[in-house]
Length: 249
Image (cartoon, rainbow, N blue to C red; front, side, top):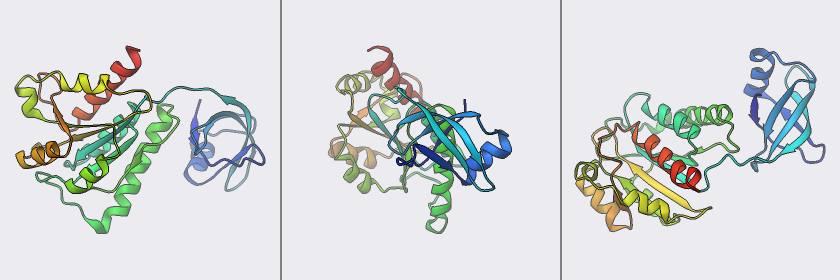
């Protein structure tokens, strides 16, 4: 059943769906009155709804039944990705959303080949946010991960102070066979906790970046014995979180 993220009109127990979602319902899905969809409110509540009216600009739906769901990871995971080339960040956001990420922060790393253009910032962020929304709908999430503006290393350090656990995925640790820090970190987290993980761009993190993160309370960890691509590593991490905190509990 199709799922849409919508604002909630509490006084009528109704939703009014407009713009892109309206077009999707009417022109792509070709739905009619009395068809049912799932709606998710801004406060992450889910409802089975029936279409009651289709006008030229909006679809009105009525709540049939509020649903109880438990689809989100038990902790909030923020993925920090060193700005990669091409459409790799698109993939990280799409698949990371499917795997349960709570937030994405692009990172202006020393070895990022891509240079951030402030003139195109709004357009890029909007595009990434749309990717997250569509992936959240497809994977039946109850929230849309937020995609933040790219951050500097100092901004990340400032942001990290509000997190319970903060990690850097460092390929040198994988080469040296480090296998314990990720497991220990995940085992230390309780439901409702928060985790921030930094991944370097294609060239990895510099020694200077790693030292600065470590000096500010980050823990360096390996992600198994193999060296993963910048677009693969966040997906490995999210899968490990799900296994440790969902499947084993």
